[in-house]
Image 1 (cartoon, rainbow, N blue to C red):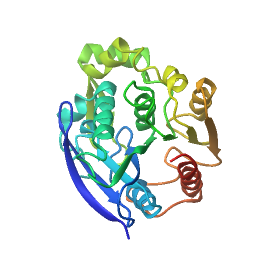
Image 2: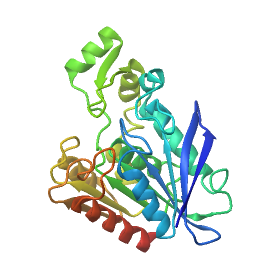
Image 3: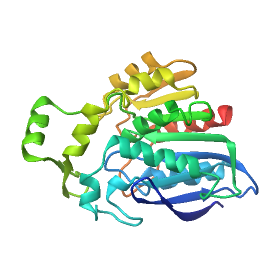
Image 4: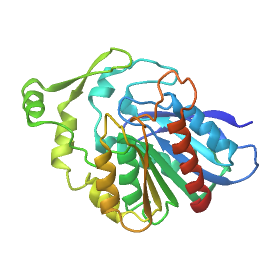
Length: 279
């Protein structure tokens, strides 16, 4: 059985909370850092089962809450709406890079082969993972990249939304799972518009070196499957697209988790096969 150990890490602007799932095998093992998406969190639905599965396959699985979730471990609702409001893509990327750098250091010391680190991101977290894989710090070091239902563009807002956002200073956001009413601050809009080149996911697809399977649901209602085709169309090097028939944005999963669906099993099997080959 794998062991789950909590950790905290001082990120660039906030304290980050995470969990490490450790394999039974002693010594240094390959590691996979997992990045959740928008309105997700490390304990959402399939993430604990994914981490347990990876640990049972011999990987150190590192998952954490981006500070912009506004959630602490065990939370089911956003308990820090100001953190949610202040979140940006740049902040998420900086936090993911900090976790990558700490993996095998202050996170799981003595348990990680730092020459065998992979990265898996879902949805917006897939975009974060892609940017990290293309970064100067990790472009030559990351051994494998996996994205599930990844976005292909950080600018996901209509002109009308942006105009109202600037006028009111916030963009209302409803959490469909909980009914909680939240808001995004104008810092996110400024980040998208002013750092467009730095957050260009298609350019990152071309720049990254890590072998990369792009896993996407054919019936994704949140991030259309056309975005996966855009990503693979710009991807240099070793990259493959797997479109899972009948799969939604979460591969049929809900929170609380009720067990894997056939679509999630297909994504998990493809991910395991890729990691075995490359990590």
